[in-house]
Figure (cartoon, helix red, strand yellow):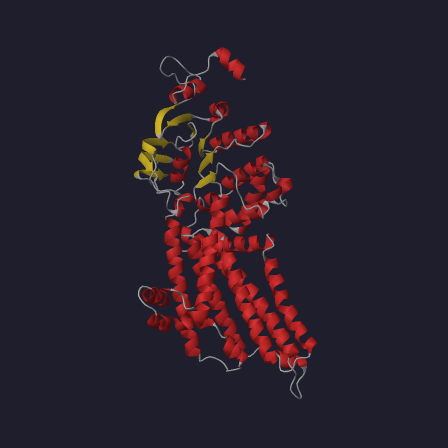
Length: 271
Length: 251
């Protein structure tokens, strides 16, 4: 039986490390990078810029979330092994699965907090920059941007971050830190850009490329499911809750699989 | 009453490497202070890792108080001091002890009391809030001793505990070990400090090339009447003991 107290204790250490090592400032710097261009757009007096502005800022949020999720998760367990802090840790009455889960929870929470900070900046700025309708104040216009579609988009993005964190953590147990960072970034960005087109690409490719692409389609996580940017930009409205539930279930199953895989690999790791 | 440590015909071969341990058997009784000696690469750390359940044996078995050390519940009775004192340098000593205490299942009230007690024992009370990054090697070693004692374990496994300690620290550690023996705790430690080991241990084992080549008590006569631990150690690991003249030169 897994102990929540032990998992949370390990997660807290991961969070404390990110906070004390000032890694959290990276998120703040990225948030400033996001805020500055947004806040200067009206300075140039461009008409109807808000839609384009949303597109650019959402793209930045997605890029930053990939960077933060990968860099946070990639060095959690390798860092413990490298510093040799893993020995006194595992000499305690703790299961290796609890260490893996604790590290995962810590990384996922840190990446989620950074993502929520980005969305807060986004909602505030896009709201404040948009022209208020008649009989609405600027604050009301800002709050209107925090509707159901936005809530669902943030939830989908959080699910993306949790899955990417799990994938990176699994990768960190079989690859070196730099190889893992590269592979995870390629898979995340590649699937976001081409995930939907993989079957078509496989049909047009010749053997063995067609097989490789088809294998990638069936094996790699479909990160494009989580991308709600177009829906937000063009105001297409909220998802059907059934669709959202299926995507979240897919996420949970994939995370569970990756955590089991990570635990099995970590159990066999030579210390 | 089961032995504190029971090792039966233990062997460990790392993949693609030579045997680290070979047919190694040993028992350590409860309440005993056992010194585990051997030259570098003899297999001491491998043995300790197997005792802690951190490494699987290739053959043979290990029991701690009659239980498998790979089970987390068994490790509740163990305190471990690693050879190299590496802890989370972004924490202070109290945060570190709270973390380990939570993992050991101590209640919040008991944990705070134990933290005060062990910090007093190792002389780190006045450095409670100082970051571990700013600790000296000796202070880190004391931190290691504090975390090993934190949950009041029945068995302490210390890997080179004297490393990095100044004479005062060594004397304190010696007193801690003596005190633990009086409390009926079992202490199993590896060391290169033969003189220190001789003072505190009830029994020694000397490991050479993964095999236990000698096990006995201090002052026990071996072979041709030798009772000096250093000479026994050097003879057992196949190195000639220094002649008195050469020893003076070495000093």
